[in-house]
Image (cartoon, rainbow over all chains, first blue to last red; front, top):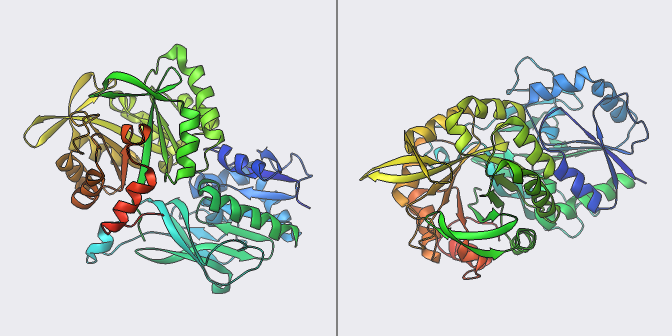
Length: 215
Length: 252
């Protein structure tokens, strides 16, 4: 049973929103600044703030890298949100010399729109709006009470391209289709902000916790 | 699919929501905590909270109000007003803001914007631009809540703000603010065409057609309004339904 979530602090940005949403669901939260702190966590959250390179370097400096890898290998739940879904892959165009957490094979790329395509040329970057997320498969726990397509809030300029296509749980379309959510074993990650997507976001977050409880 | 955001704006003075005309003649329009909760549940895509008192003595009260407001809001919350330093931004983020809008300090000290976007990420930093028409096709940037002209051209400043790293621009027409006569379509269109970050159109919404017009003619990424929502002339939902019927993608 998940009781306490550790929100990994990359050294910048707002951890309040996700902490608030997790607390609403009745869980305890703690901000994890260093991997050597507090070992009795049931869930690690990689939240959605900052820059890929800066986040990875903070994670490595503060012994958080070992903590995350240990969690991953021992089958304990990890939830990634926004930048969090990007960090779990191998590398990103946002920081060419940085290595990601490499939990999964794949890279993170930037939205690029061909200048010939006039419809796409109008799309601003960052992709900052509510967008339709299409769930690829049905799932009795994760998608309980949700429709096949729901609106979620996005704020990002980069998105993940997993090598193993079967981990892609949902996609969204912004100029072209991209991976919006991955699920594999003890890892669930979303490119959109669960904590900023109103009641639907809270519902999916609740389902994810439920899914983790059943692991 | 791109969806246009509909954003209610809370102009907050001494902890209360107020609304004026051309940035003056303020009158009471409600409690920010209650209004934000109401809008968040009613389908607002985002909420903007601008502190227009913004004096140093009152900052602490502001953080408390932001904290109370954010508590019941599970959609993005942008907070602005009197932001002068990295510490101010950090304090607002810890109070529960998701994004911080910078106006006067960005003009006076552009390196602050760069430092802020490098520290918190560009998605977190909104540059608010208050512009006033000075010639037929030309607008000047005003600061200090619309009281001080800067000599800066609004279009050039918008481009510069994007280069400094702003994640989006909140563009308010001082001429149109509070008039309910419609957004400044030309100004909004010119800024949208000059930058690639999202532009929030603000100032002048009074009728449903105004929202449709600024999206269709000027390509605004988001539409912001205050009094039409506070005084319940239109609900957020009504505006979104009308946009959808006009062929604009919105979240319903």
